Length: 435
Ligand code: LLP
Image (cartoon, rainbow, N blue to C red):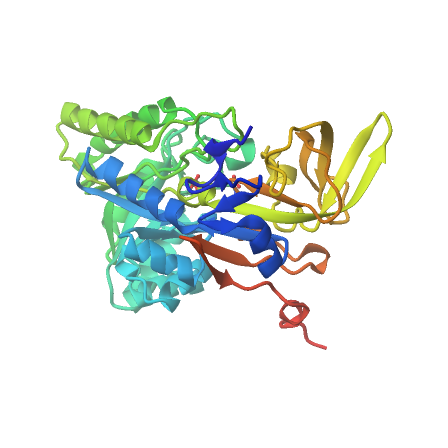
C-alpha cells in the first residue's frame, strides 16, 4: 500500500506502478539527473508556507512566519520563501549570505545561534538584519559594542530557556535547564539578561524568544512554556521589559512513517495563539507580535530522495543487505538520531512486498544504514528506491564523507523539473585544497 501521508501532495502511482511527483515520473528523473538525487515538490513547499500563514493569521493577524533556514536553504528556495511572504531565521553568516545573495529583505531576518562570532554579528549589524536573538551575556556585550561602533541601535530578542521538556530526541532538545541554548529562567540568568539588555545603550529589546526542540509531537509543551515565559515577562515589566514581540520558535512535527500522526498546522496554531492571548489577557499585558519559525514542517514533506540499487548481499538466516548509491553523506539522520523512514520501490509500486531487507548506504561505516528490516518486493541491481520526508535536515546536513559528491536538488512542478543545485564534481570537492 502506498503511504501517501508521508509523500508530497502531488505524489501518485501511475498505471505502470511507477511513482510520480509533481507530474514527473521518478524513474525518468533518476535517469535524467542521475542518483542519488533529491526531488522537491514546489506545490507542497508553497502550500505549506501558505498554510502556516493562513492557520496562524486567521487566528492572530499579528503573526510573522520565519522559515528556519537550517532545515535547508539555497538561493532559489530563498526566492520562493520571499515570494510567499515569509521571513527567515538564520543561524550563521553563511545562511545570511544566501539571503543577501538574492536580495532577501534583511529586515525580515532573525539571527539565531548560541555562539555567533564577532564577524557574523558585524555582518548582521552592518547589513541591517532585523532582529538578533541574543543567547549569552558574552553576545549581549559584544553586540552592544559592535552596534555602538557602527552608530546603530540593533533590535534584539532575548532567548530564554523555560525548562520545559518537549519529549523528543535528546540531541534536539533545547529548552531544558541543561542546554547550551539561551538564558535559563530557573537560574535567574534570563532576568539578569533582560535587565542588561534594557540598560544597553545600542540595543533595543523587543521581547523574548524560546525554542523547545524538534520535532515536537505534543501540544502541551508549547502551552506550558508559553504560559511560563509570559508570566516571567510580566514579572519584569517594572524593570522595563515591554513585550512587543514573542516567539515560541519552531519544532512542528511531520510524519516520517505511515503510522505517525503529528498534530495539524492548525492544531499548533490553535494551541499557541489561544495560550498566548488568554495568558496575556489574564496578566493585563498588551498582545505582542507573534513570530513562529517552522523549518522541518515546511520543507520536510516536500522532499523525496531517489537512489539506485547496486550490490545485494544475502546472509542466509541473518539479513539481506540492499546497497544504494547514497547513504549517510546525504542523510545522516538514521545514524545520528535513529530516525526511521519509509522506503518504496519507485518502479514497482504495484508489487506486493515479499521480503525483509535492510537498506545500506555506500559509505565505509557499518552504521551507514538508511532503513533496517523493511518489507519490499524482490529488488535487483538498477532498481530505484524512493525515501520520502527528506526535505529537511538531509541536504542541509549532507557531507563529503569518503569524498562522495553531494547530490543535486531538483524542483518539480506541473510536469516540469528544474535543477536548483547541480551535483558536486570531484573538482568542486578540491576547490579549497592547496597543494
Ligand atoms: N527556531 C530555532 C531557534 C531552532 O533552533 C530551530 C531548530 C527551529 C526554529 C526550527 O525547527 P523545526 O521547525 O525545523 O523543527 N537536525 C535536527 C533538527 C535540529 C533543529 C535545530 N533547531 C534533525 O534532523 O531532526
